[in-house]
Length: 191
Image (cartoon, rainbow, N blue to C red; front, side, top):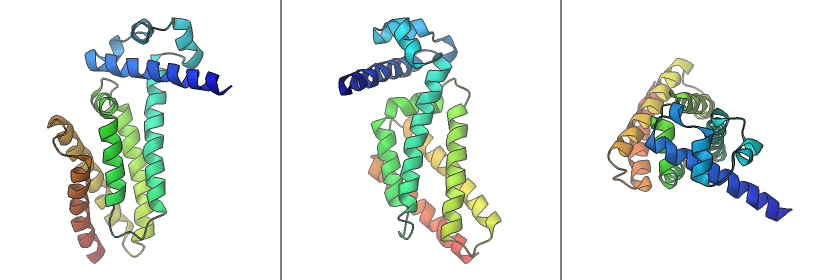
């Protein structure tokens, strides 16, 4: 039974990797199941055992990626008394760095920003919960604005990192962004 599970995981990984490679080469709307199965050296029937169509495949890739990020944020919630968010940022940027090809296509693909919208929603929702836990005495509008500022800043800096060929390590990115956030939090704590 474990061998079968391993084969299924390997097959799904081949299919996902084929889609990611193809998304580097052409717009998502131009990719077909045939393109994916030819790239993965599988037959179409195998594809349809696991996915309804390429939109289902992309949605599952996005959901798995978001789930990994959500798990990082949930783990961080357990360490809420930490003086900064460096540990979370370091884990997040290491994950992005390790999955560079995936993030490049998800953040810059022709899938009309669906992944980016889902990511923003996840971070805002979980971020507001974290802010509520940490800054109970600060008014909600202040940390809503602060969270929006941080979210857009982190996404902008991440995009710049990609545009610069990921010229800094994930640790350097985490350190820099942690400093940006902590300086902003010191202002928030005074409000």
